[in-house]
Image (tube, rainbow, N blue to C red; front, side, top):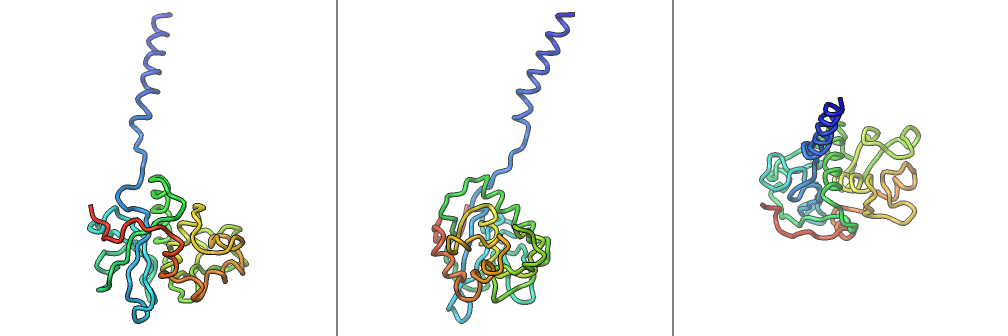
Length: 205
């Protein structure tokens, strides 16, 4: 009986040692979860923002962005993201994210993509302040701007981008906070000033 118990204990110990090694832990690779920008907006006065969903520019549909009026938050090709304009760099939050954080950014971007969120020229992120929760969930957003995609994803996970100490978090339900992230107070071109440059080159392998 003791011999059987010992064998069972040995098998159980081996299983507990092997199991963690067999679990696939996701972590972002390449440039996944970083913000990207190009020029060519409003007669080149401003920029367009997106986020790397794929690790490199030549990955399949590597970009998550809001193309603008008449479209929704979507995956897209590198060519469509550039739209014949000049690439302006890869950026990350000033608080350095880990690869696990960046995997969360990608995951949230993919959630936004499922909601058919329309475009809003005036507000980074627009929602009904009367019906949204204390923290505005991705499925409570009715419309947003390209730079709002970046701002929302980063700030949902506590990575501050633009804003005052009181109203910086665009994911917190607030009439004044929503208004704080509107108009020309923050634009894609201004947004990069609140981020750190990763590289000014195209995100290649």
